[in-house]
Image (tube, helix red, strand yellow):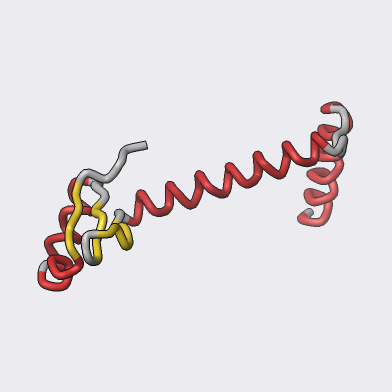
Length: 96
């Protein structure tokens, strides 16, 4: 993970919003906005934001699967495949 390299005070953002937006979009960079010298929030491109959201969703799914496995809530792969095949066939019948 790339750590932000650009820090800007909030006063800079107030007067140079378009420049910060351009910097973030063109360079795929991350800009940390500070208030009283303390990091307050981060500006990232929409692409970076969506990638982060997708990564977080995948990590939550992995965590959920691990919890289910730890509780013993598992079944053989062959049974899961058969269930999936039955669902696909049922859906195809509905669509036909």
